[in-house]
Image (cartoon, rainbow, N blue to C red; front, side):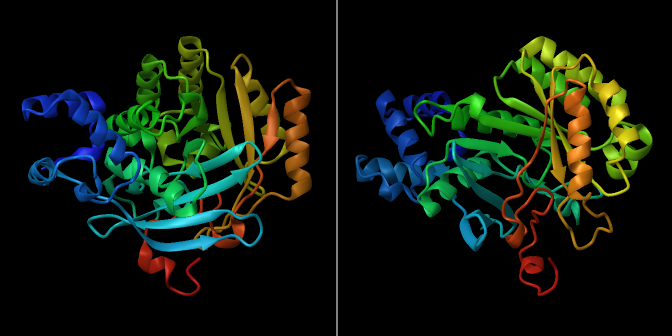
Length: 347
């Protein structure tokens, strides 16, 4: 059966017409789906006969909360969602003065192997469906009671590794008949899959592309991020230039500050040279602890000096505020394994 929540309104309309149902019924069903109903029987403005027909044609899935943690520091909420096949992924709800942002996952596990990230431990299990991505936004909003205004695709998985699904998710969540979250309120993070960056540029979406750079030299970046062995720093930055030229959208570069690895003044000088000519913003991220990794965060004064050096050269740079650190909900700390989450001492 078809996964009805992964269908666009146009697709649903086409199906309903083929079923002999009027066009407006598709709009009613689409609206119900994007309000978070858990069964067709909740669609009370449909006849019982139609609801039974839908049960025979489509599957309607939804996640359940396997675990929910709330930060005592800043109110950040981390959800571990159990999916229909028993796999789990995490999402994080962060509260800012400008609105509420949810960080969602695109895959169960991650194949990219970045040295500083818990999400990649255990590798890739499977890619999520559009509805499973949408549900993280929808049910986070429902469970928390807080309206979601912004989305970041920075959770478990590499979004561009699940390209077609991510594009379908973006269309669904952007739909005026659905959650209607504008593209300018969505950020997509990638470790640097160059061919997909070029493909995304042609979509000309008005989202923010965030590129996980983390080092300006091939020697260091290849140690931290295996993707660099396929696409070098210069190859990646050339793709970023093309992306800006095509879309007019400034690139946000994520840069985890790792003590003694990528935080020296000399490294900052190399980064400045590499970013010259690129419309960029650098987001410095004090590294968050991952139990299995020996890497440690840079000292605060080192981060401030690195930031000043970039800004003095004309490159906008900010230090990301760390949210949810007391519940392991910060950047690089998300995991997909429920058993690991419940094992003392594993986080």
